[in-house]
Length: 390
Ligand SMILES: *Cc1c(COP(=O)(O)O)cnc(C)c1O
Image 1 (tube, rainbow, N blue to C red):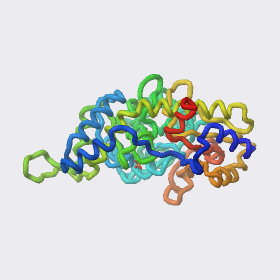
Image 2: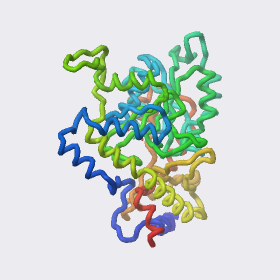
Image 3: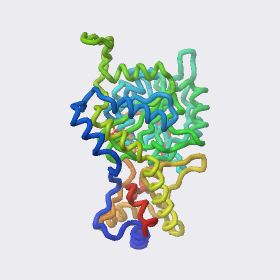
Image 4: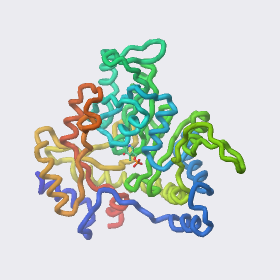
């Protein structure tokens, strides 16, 4: 199976490269012009036109009314959680299969991650299984939702759109309403992904995006908070800019704020990248299509495609081995990486990491199975253009 899979991957990937990374940034637009302008004018840091421009363009593209640019996606998650009222001692429901940032941000608030199982169809949080679980362990009182087993308040749920594939949001929204939970979307991987025609990040009260170097678009490092609530947007801006009270010369701050503002230099990069996003998404769809065609009749594995309710950005392509082939995973990772085709396993489930091992969790059978069987394969935008040129 392994030699055949490598042959199939090679049929999609360019032949003239000895090494193919998992995800490379792509700078073919106005990056140099906009960044040079920052350097020429001296507006490199916390003041300049590109931050405002980037925020306006993000809001326009996603259709979410307000975007607040910040230093990275982790900071965006941290502030989002604080703004929906997550407090020390609260529990926050989140998938165990996610990047560490989701669990870290919950912990920065003094709150406790409570791990939820995934569903195979989306690789993300399973809303139906969560619903059944909450029926058992949760109790809604006048002042919120409580975990009957720990006595702690469950304040929020943070779904994450894995590799750009949206989770099933409708049943999750319904559940949030019934259990009085705040929905904070970790949309770090899903810029350009839509659930039933509406951009991810616009479903909960607030959401986080990331523009890290490996994401669909990058600002070097960066992130954004998305919300339709003007009050929340204003507080997000205030809290991420040291909670400074606006004044021409005086330094007054009315809260313990954060220095989470995105520098103008990075925002300039972001504006240039955002202009290219539609093209990137087309290339990504083309690459996914090529993989799907090449892998569709291969026994023993499934190429991950968008759920029927979604249009995905196909940020990171993935294959899931059948349960019977799971033992091949490590050999497969070794063989592909040795041959210059970079592949990666799924993240280690958060519940297995030492700092989160004591956190509450539901049955995680699907997540544990997916973790053992899922492999990411090269997904850079430029890989999608090749067949059209040939
Ligand atoms: C990238 C990412 C983040 C944010 O990461 P930063 O590096 O802080 O921008 C958060 N959650 C998930 C799931 C991610 O993939």
